[in-house]
Structure formats: structure tokens, C-alpha cells
Image 1 (cartoon, rainbow, N blue to C red):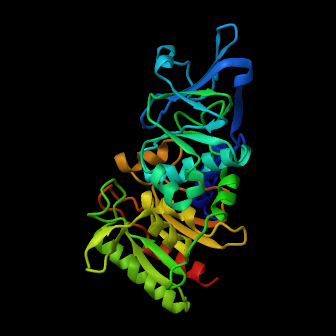
Image 2 (tube, rainbow, N blue to C red; image 1 turned 45 degrees about the vertical axis):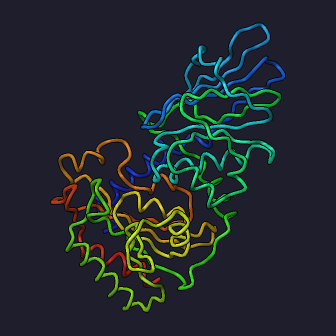
Image 3 (cartoon, helix red, strand yellow; image 1 turned 30 degrees about the vertical axis):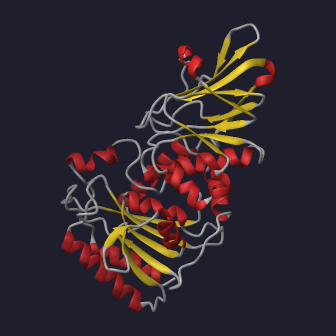
Length: 369
């Protein structure tokens, strides 16, 4: 029940997480103007993980070095200056955690880049870390922006001459290594600028089937339970005369010869842009909800299964840490009607279950609107 103490406790916890992640506002900017220095440098020292560190600094006319001191910005490695790659013109840069993973690219990096794009001139180029799938995502979704990027390898020092370096940052983290967000309004505007070819079969309701063998990293649904959920969805769609097509998404697609392959980024983007509703357990597949129609008037509906306070052991640890495993707080402010269902207490990382009665009530309420 939405009026129960359990529901109110969960809602209050999510609100606290959202405040921690977004409450300090949008990122800040720091500019290094080469007019007042002999040279300006930027480098990202870490190749990935939850703590990615960088340096942005300049050598002043008197020979001293001035560097940005902020969360995940550290003093520069001066010895690396001699091997710097020299570029000219105005550049902007940021860095963030887990650049090697698709889910974190779309739930955090895209927003940070969208913020920078909005703050600098159209002639400004960008320094982005050449790790993970970001390069391919930008190339297929926004080729004009891709053409403005200089891709930087970890530990590669960039020397900027005859131009300005603008870097975005937050003074502190949210809690522990978790970065702050605060750029979702810029992300929403950027998403609206993307050109989209709608699928020929119209609108979709997507169920993310997080099952083996495609899923291997926890929160894997029990196979039979997963089939029961799909059957319940089909009955609810029929009951409410939904005209969308149900798509069971697991990140793969069959080619013309009937062989399964991984979906390309553009195929995932196009599919989720056509969705009115996305349902499924927390995982990288659910990060794709960011591609849903970003117009403020949209009524995108998301139902995410996630870990709750009744889950025990290793499976439940994520709830007791800052920020449970849900995209709700990450995509805060985007046009989503966001619902989440917690896993039952008998769930494990390899066999997860939800309350089917609560699920049925939820989808019937959503599909009746």
C-alpha cells in the first residue's frame, strides 16, 4: 500500500539519496586562460573504476603551477609534461567514474557531457577519455559532436596552446566515491536534439528479461518466475486493450538467418525511444530507459525491480550502502512516472523473485491510464 509505513520509509530513503546526488545543483566550471600562462595541461590518470582521477593545471609566467583542487582532481604529475600531446584552440573536459561500462556512460557521463556542450561555444572541442563504449555511442548517435572530440588515453597529457581550457567539476562527492549529478536538465535537452528513426512496428512495451545466459552479474530472475511475469504482462495488456507491441529485451536480437547476436547501440536506442513503458530488474539493460521520449509532455512509465531492506546477505548489501540499485535517483527530473518493486526476501543473486500480486496491481494501474 502507498500509505503503508514500509512504502513511506522507502520513499523517504529515495528522497534522501536524490538530495545527496542532485541537491548541490549543477556542476561548476573552471577556466584556464592561456593568455595568462605559458601553457595549460589536462590529463586523466586512471583507466576506470569507481575513482577516476585527473589533473588540470597551467604554468604561470613566473614558473609556478596553478591546478584545480576539487573532487577527483589531484596535483599534476609534472614529469609527464615533457611527453604531452600539443593541441591548439579552445577545449573543454570532464571525467567521471566507471567509463568502461555502458550503463554508467548513459546514466552519468552523457549528462556531464551535455552540460559542457551547453556551456561552451560551438567551436570548442572536447577532451574525453578513450575507454569503454562512449566513442561508439557518440559516433552513431551524434556524429557532429563526435567530430569535435579529441580522445585521450589514460595517463596521456594534453597541452593546450593558443586557447582556453574549461573543465567541469563538483567540489565534493555525494557520499564516498559516488559522484554528484545535477545535469539532467541539460541531458534532457540534448536527448531531444537527437534524430530518431521510429521502428516500423510502432510503439512498444519493453520487459527486460535479466536471465541466464545473457545476464551474469547478479539480480538474475528465476527462469520460471520470469516466464510467469511475461505471461502476466500479456494478460494485462490484453485486458486494457493496449495497442503497443510487447518486446522481451535481453540485449540480443535474431538476424535474418535466425542467429542471435548482440544488439548494436543504435538498435537499442531506437527500440527504447519507441517505448511507452519499460519494466524489469535493475541492471545495465534498464539504463536504456534514458533513451525514452524526452519531451516534457511524455508519460514514460518505468517499473524497476530492485533490492529492498528485507533482502539479506550479499544480495541485500547494496540497499544498506548509500544508493540502492535503482536508476530512479540517477534519472531524477527526466519525464518518467517511476515505480520500483523490491525483491522478495527469498531472493538471491542467481534466483530473484518479486511479489506477483503487487506486480499485477501495478501494471494494471499503469495500463488503465
